[in-house]
Image (cartoon, rainbow over all chains, first blue to last red; front, side, top):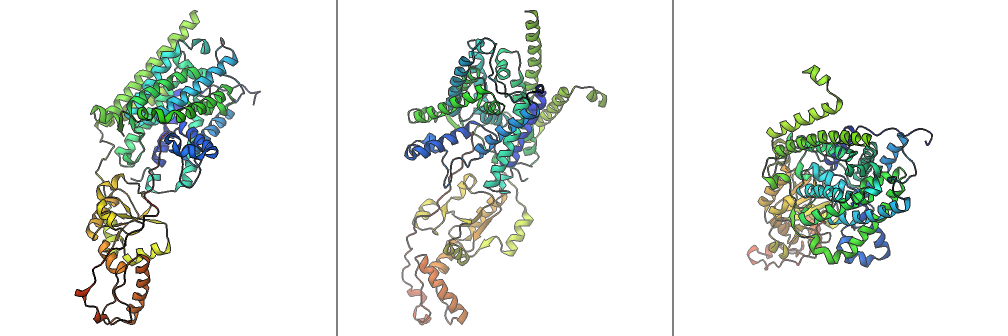
Length: 173
Length: 199
Length: 218
């Protein structure tokens, strides 16, 4: 796979229509949209529950992901996110885009880039929990349903990212 | 008039997990097709050099929005059965801001990070570690911030309810806004490319 | 017109589709049907005529005794009446709360109130909203009291009725009721007017309870 050059990405509007149809299929078949961060919250609840069950039960932020009579893993979003990994991998394989690499601009070291990735991840976790969803569950799903809170969230994501973009320019450009 | 199928009991909990997996595959596939496995491509959005994020996201929103509207208006789907995350305005505004900071610092959002990991991006793996840490941190701090987290709740709230405008009119407005945005994005990309060529 | 579309780039064709669908949406109906709903009147009428919209009290009692778990019982009465007595596995959902309840459209749901009328109204509301497995408890709580909690053997009972009563006596005891006469007693010796004051058995806590509403967010 390394021998063949990576294919160019799809026309963004066509990819967008594809993504939109997947989302629409989820609405029609399941009556719910897609998500991502919720699956990680379920995984965390499962992990912490295995170590300290009392701690999970006492804290509503953990406990809301508990399931009656089964593990928090048996959850719609967990299976959906597993699919996201598989789907992303399939698409990458077909287009020869699966390579072990670090995404960064030319002016930053790998170590610093990974530190920023870690910090970004922490902020993302806090933000997604606070907003009750991430770009998938809020912006995309709620955006298509004209959900008021989702549109407020989406605008603020762009405000936050553009607001901090200048300070972060050494990482990306 | 039988959609959403699951809510009408056409299949059970276990089969719904299979559906989840298939939906996820479709989601991940198109995210990667669009180039959302690459943090550089995602972050370029914020420097106006590559506005793919905006284009893909709003094309997807417009597609799904039109589909939802027409399937519901024609009576194929009962929109009231589609889950709508309740609005908690201020926590969602602050959460969006924090997630936006995280996006430009980390380079991925949670969904695109999964696709990045699937295609070997090490930074995406590190970001997911951070994501776990962030969620655990939030959960541990939850007793302190529960009041804020549950403040300014409006329940299930849609833009037609907020604005008092008809649903269909807002659908059209979003379509126009997106198309205007796309035209602007194409123009901006050309201008940035030209500027880069000059330099 | 055809040439115009043929000459458009793929991106512009997509944009054209979006504009047309969006423009039509301006004059289209509201996608939220709100409280309005429709019911298949023919199907409902057939069910009514055949009586397949109802479940008898002894049938329900059998299900509960057998420990079947494939159905839910809904008490439509006000919370105070529910607190006083309810059929053991019943959960309390007043009529106004049906739309927001956690009932799902494929579950078998048995509705009851004091008598049959309120349950029949609720049955129609749920049918209209696409709930397929709804049933009315025939005769409501009144029939439950008469036939299950406090069964009485008719005067001059036939042998079949006597056998039936013997069985109901067991069922009645299971639910904490009191059969009104043993088959060996002289039925005439218990005049209707002299019935002892019926005390309702205290219902045990509902075992299953209301299911938690599932979280579906991100």
